Length: 164
Image (cartoon, rainbow, N blue to C red; front, side, top):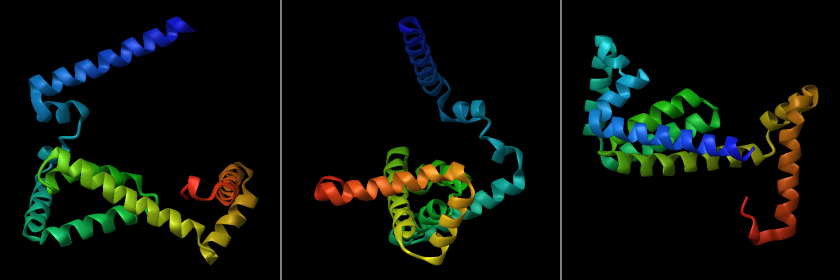
């Protein structure tokens, strides 16, 4: 067991080191090409659409751009649209002028979107009632409701120590 974890650690370190060398030597373009994310260069229509979207985004007021980005992340989180989250995460660096700025803004927007989704899930609405009916119909989903009930009990007992 110990040798398996040592092997896994060594393999992980190698993959990270190889990725860092690839980024350093080949740059971001080589990394994107290796992952197969350079599909926009092969499709001129998609490239034109992306260029026009970026041109439009650059004309927006930064506050409006940020608000639209947060709204997009909220939509993605509320409706569990994971592919949209990947697109938003990858595009954030381009939209906000750098990898660090994009990562920070993307993380903040995703957190806001997740908080809105969580708040909506806790509200007593007809949609939640329908979801609870589905939980009763499909036993595999019961674990999710049990975790929610457990967290509510912890919140009542510990109060300010657990923020839900």
